[in-house]
Image 1: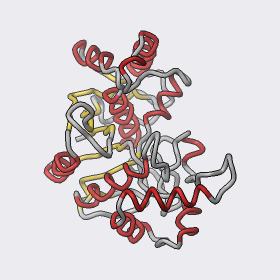
Image 2: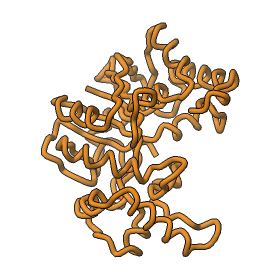
Image 3: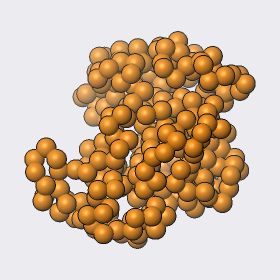
Length: 280
């Protein structure tokens, strides 16, 4: 199974975790760009436990997950936390969200304006938020909620963790990276009803059209049914289309599973404490 996951650290029925499931319609496509990714369905999970149980019950998958897999080395060293990824994740999981917030807030308070947060190396090319951010978006909590469930599923995380199940592979994805390539800084989603405007619908329409046309540097074309297209455009919160963006990114990685280094198109060498976003 190939899937992209738009994640929430506090999912609900109204704002669930969304998983876009798909397959490579031409699995023998070379990496020069004639791949087709077929969207086979969307799944939704209203609780973290339901999502985690699904990961454990699905025997084989390659997934792209929209949450960070690591913390900035600068932050970890400053706090004196474990400098090995597995030990660091165990320590991080042992903390409460309040402890994380207070620790990170104190770190930021001691730093100058314009440099409050520490960044991972991947944040630059990906344009992603620092993984220590606890608000807007709360990616620090997403890491705290997501990575332990990947580990519980025995997933292999290339470059970071070998895992118990070689048939379950987790890659960090970031939909904003691919969306900006296609429509620039145009906003295409909002959780606030008054901001779910015709302009944002137009941006989603252009974004989805570009994915279907295969105009991205990934060399992959999205295939959807008319009903799926309507569903993706109707989701003004953008969770569905974000999951699809992650699906395209992980498909690109799957085509490069045997590339040098950790594989899946990841850099041959990157900081094994911080992690790396696929396609960045």
